[in-house]
Amino acid sequence: MRGGDRAGAASDPVRAQRAKVARGVAAASRVGYALFGLAIVLFVVGFATTFSGAIASATIACLVAGCVVLAPAIILGYAVKSAERHDRELGL
Image (cartoon, rainbow, N blue to C red; front, side, top):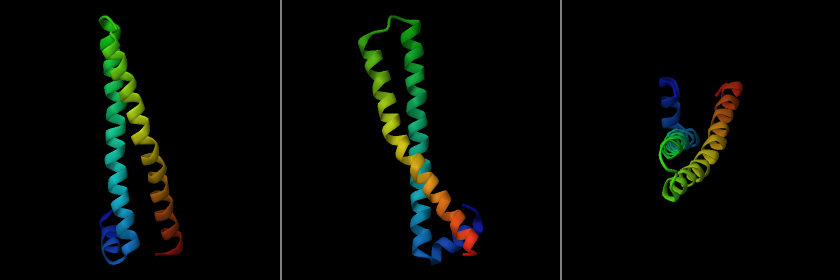
């Protein structure tokens, strides 16, 4: 959010809640992409060495957890952006 948006978010409870959701979305996106990155690293390590069951399980767990965290974050991120765009179009 830009500086002017924060002033509006402080006075409007809906915009304050939207800003809170946007912060959560940003954190969830970082966690989700970090889990995907970790899955890639684990896969490369497993590929370079003997691909054990533990490495395979950890890779799959990171991929599944990344999907579980990232999918709602992406959807909510688009919802927040759409609501902000709608407010701007209405002149709010």
